[in-house]
Length: 22
Image (cartoon, rainbow, N blue to C red; front, side, top):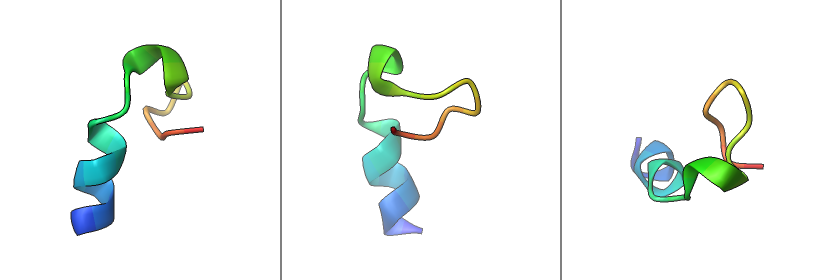
């Protein structure tokens, strides 16, 4: 689940509506 933590570190502006990094 380390990948999810890295995606969380992405700014909200770079995240999709689902909260996943795009």
